[in-house]
Image (cartoon, rainbow, N blue to C red; front, side, top):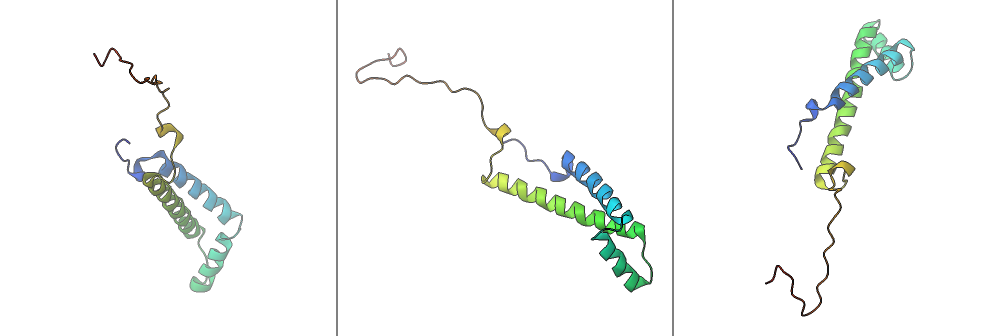
Length: 109
C-alpha cells in the first residue's frame, strides 16, 4: 500500500460538497422533506424561516453523512475486509516447474 491519503485531499470531498449543496437547494426550494420539517421548526422557534439557513444546515448534514460514510469505507479497506481491484497485483505469475525427485537444476550446480 502506498502513502495513506487524508480524506480531505481526495476529489470525493469536492464532489460530495457540490452534491450536498445542490441537493439541499432543490429540497429547500421545492419544500420537500427534510427541508420542510426544518423550515417548520424554524418558524416555530423564530417566527419565520430563512431559506439560506435551511440550505446551509441541510448541506452540512448531507456532507457530514457522506464524509463519515467515506471514512468508514476507508477503515474497512485498511482492515482488509474489502479489497479494491486496482490494488491487487494483476501481473501474470510465472509458473514454476515442479522438480522431480533426483532432478538437479542449473541453479543448484
